[in-house]
Image: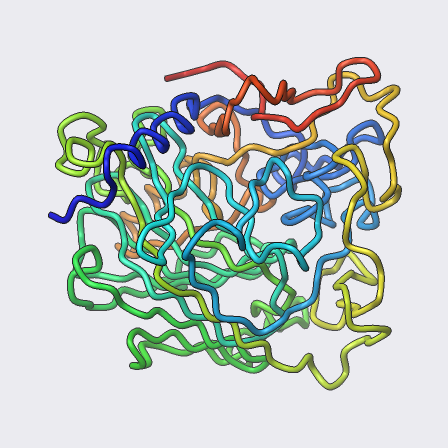
Length: 439
């Protein structure tokens, strides 16, 4: 096996990830609780936690925030091809305020840059890494050329995910390198009949180009230019609700590496992920000190919005209704950048932390990965019923990220004196969701 990093780079990864401990988190908001966020911390994150600042940026849930307007408007799609000779196009989640003109990607977790590639890493007892686009896509052709990770319990993914929990997936289980899984969800409804499995040559040893062609009337999944499956919007019509249950709202592109095989995860999740993770004796842990996903290139080709779109500008996506349907998306010229990490969509220029003692500013990563349910019985039922997988629904789907879930401590550099909660009139970038260390 090729050694990915020299000693200096490996040391940097392990140093930055040494405190990426796995913490328990408690869900504050979402459909499983039937709870919106309170006025003191009004934004509901992708992981079902309430706060301000980054909670109100990418992944902010309009349905379960205090009101939809507390979520900051999101930057509109711009076509691009991303390669990674260095980290200039990537910003840490700890520093991102919503300015997509300066960075194309937000990183949560640890990564290194080698041979024009970004390597997402998962050192021992960490929650892995997530790379998310700063701009949202509202229909487009998205491709990623990558090598997946490997090993029991290790899950790699490439997805689109909207704040309304519309989701389109590629996913890979580390103990089966000849299979690629595809899936989709509408508004996080945990319907596990949508998954598919596809033959592919060794996903760890070989680079492949995985493509999601997301159009207003259909989705197509392809590998190396060969179409695997397609979903027609017309086939998703629900006669009872009179709606198309089809992914249809602006989404972030996310690539991730996460530990499905933690001992703290539900039995069904561990079984689906291929078993428990070997943090000590797996060849990649011994050789490199981490599991990894290697990303060579990401391409985003934006399609035109639907002909009937509510167009009042070209800079930002917002919603006119919490229904979260295509017809509710508004393209406007609203601002997308917070002044500080105590702002919200209702107060973009906030810089006075008075009264915000104990309020968190940056949400943590869930154990279930970017698009998955919390570690719940759903995985077990899904595996036993049809043998297929899917990243499932996120925290807003009725599946709590509760005691079995965890978040990620990120980049704990004491020289920057970060804090995860407001302390009196002081504020700083948070390192992680404060909680009980379980590993």
